[in-house]
Length: 299
Length: 273
Image (cartoon, rainbow over all chains, first blue to last red; front, side, top):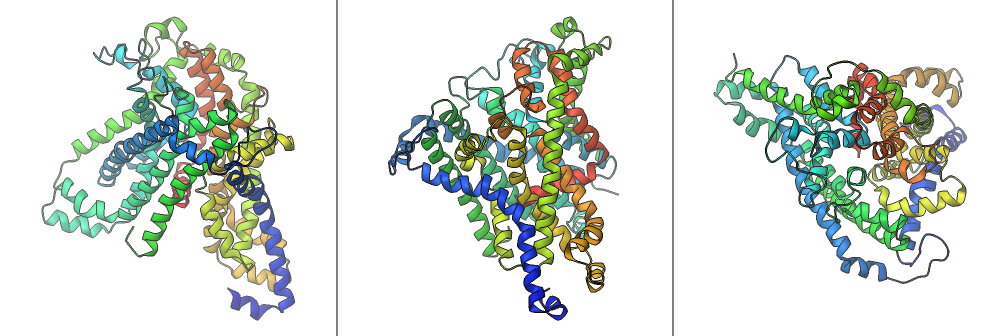
């Protein structure tokens, strides 16, 4: 690239091109500094203050962070994030792996299935939530319509022991098709001859999946684990829309707690410390992933 | 010719299909029922079709206004992101700038920065700048949120474009702006379309920033006003289902029409962040 340019123009010409380059980058850099970089740096500062959101911010050192360590609400929020992560690393992952694998082994209607599986992913979160609030309604939902004992009369979003998995379930309905499509794309790049060889050996579906598909899509699988873990620690929309953290804090996640600290409790400084802590979790997961790749692990 | 029969495979796939699509079918059913019928049967097909629900939902949910807001916000976001990311990707791939690598590294990090990190100061900054409760203010946030991802997508697209035409144009004395407009832009159209679809979908459905930064009913996009609507008509499935269908219809039509572009773009965007 650089060689071609040097051949073509004088160094004054090159300088002009570079100036133009920065001019072209300017809009990107300006909006990112204004919205993301600047406020992120400010958040670092405010996390060491008692800022309420309006008025003065007084430096209080590490007080917000020591408070975080002892805050039972934050601990319970993080615990819910951990449960959410555990649910998301298993249920949608298994569904997407199974769906994508089976879809990769058939030829007819493949396009139809792929589109259908992906449709919930393009539905707005408020709509997905309202669909499932209807379907899981204790009086008028599927439970009573189909007369399924146990489902009938159960208030999934109102029962503290069911609310978190129920909200996660709605998000899974929305999200799993995305994983499926991701896996399917990766599976389609596996060498077909491997499957043919396995067939000659008399391998069944399960052995094909275990010995060829799973190793074949390992990088995508690891990537999905990283993505799902990070998103699980930041999950907000479905909880906020369906339960607002209730009943009795049963679905409160770190992100909804942070939100309440900003907009209900006027604890902007404390919320900034919370946001920074969450970001560290996200960056640590990312860093592990990046280092593992740099080390040349096949992930 | 295979060692396994395909019938059980299709059975599992069909079960998953029912799980994915069934709830949407119920949504369509409920949107067409009378309130009385929905009260006794909230799952099954309607005995008669009542289109009045859509009219009622449109009026009572103020969808004329909020759909327009969503359209304006989405259009503003898509156009802005395409311009910002198009220029940036061009600079990164064609204009040998120093520090381009650092910019690319930032873009990769930016796609993973949690909103929770910068939300608090951003909210108070926007309040002070008079951008809180302004559709334009929300659009500027979306520009920043989606331009890193869009730039990365376009950057990899531009790298794959042949350079012969550009070089020929430059030798003919064309300036960079003309090269970008007359040579690169037409070639980049498929890449830009993918970016526009992905960003448009994100902007239309975006919830977190919309609910935080817009308060006035007349400025809200349709998703956040729909939440308020469902909370005030919580037991009326016919009305909320009809409103829901109106919201998802534009997205569904576009998605089904252009599903390959959508899916490729969205999975690629996932891969970047």
